[in-house]
Image (cartoon, rainbow, N blue to C red; front, side, top):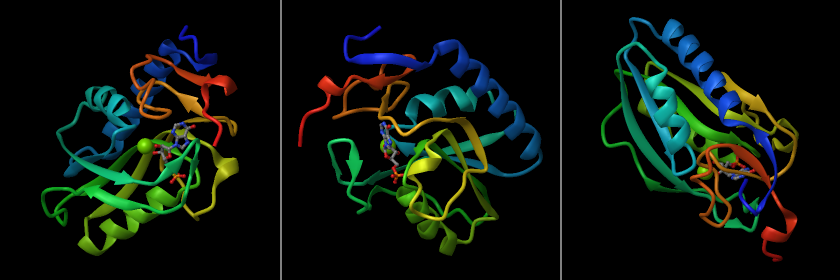
Length: 180
Ligand code: IMP
Ligand code: MG
């Protein structure tokens, strides 16, 4: 285990099993539909790369990147688009792939940005959900794990851009978090 991890919350095996389950469900739900997976960078990159291989129907992928002005482990609530999709989406059923649904501010902003582009549909697939922290009125259509209000790292999730490469999801040690 990494020295800055207090405890493993979700193991590699649990992640693998859940991703397989989500991929199976998504494949059933979107069979025969023009599915476009929208990966929200950078946190979702690991989840996305595993999830897309667990989906056995035809689909396309694209990427978006938002910046949400983090200070330490709390979002400021201000969201800005850094990288947009590179094609129109009106012929696609969009599935937004997110690492974690926290306050929900980022995902509601993304939904508001994409809705006027009139896709066939928009749904959300999040690996992790922290329901206690929700501020915006938003729910995931597919959710991997509901977790308590603790700051987690690994499997794509970072603190200060570190730890994304850990193969599990772990709770960060308080002493590894900078005081601010
Ligand atoms: P929201 O807008 O508050 O829902 O924040 C969503 C984004 O905050 C996620 O895409 C993550 O980048 C980040 N985030 C929220 N909670 C955590 C956490 O526990 N660990 C790492 N990143 C987090
Ligand atoms: Mg993120």
